[in-house]
View 1 (cartoon, rainbow, N blue to C red):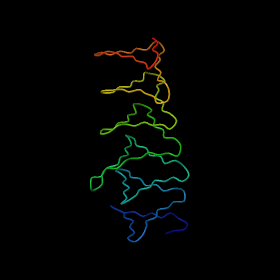
View 2: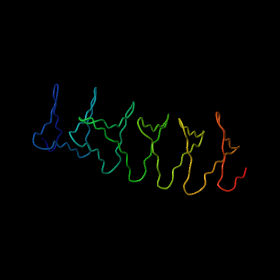
View 3: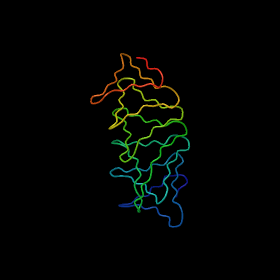
Length: 168
């Protein structure tokens, strides 16, 4: 090592930093850079892998995409992926769509103080393969439209019922 000058460690094929009894500590006063000119960089852990930025954001960028997934362990048990924030979780697509898809179960969107689904530029479509249910437990359900409201059925009757008074 050198107190006053740079130290370069070079290898013709592979360079290994190994500690058989403790931690390998890589430390830089102004940062640490790990890069590969031609191939992938892999970071693997036998248990937990923690990315932590104590003073700023953790920024993960991919030129052709970013994938975060949870596979299965040796016994075939599959695990969840959790996205949690102390304040807000923001998903933004600057081009293209955002899809929330569950291949084997339901998609549940739940808000403590409400849920808003809106579109500033185009239509909002709610479609179900069999039923679409709109209900409320504490107040009325209101359907309104700028130029009208259409309620219809292609194959069956339309029933409008009220518990007390029906005004059309």
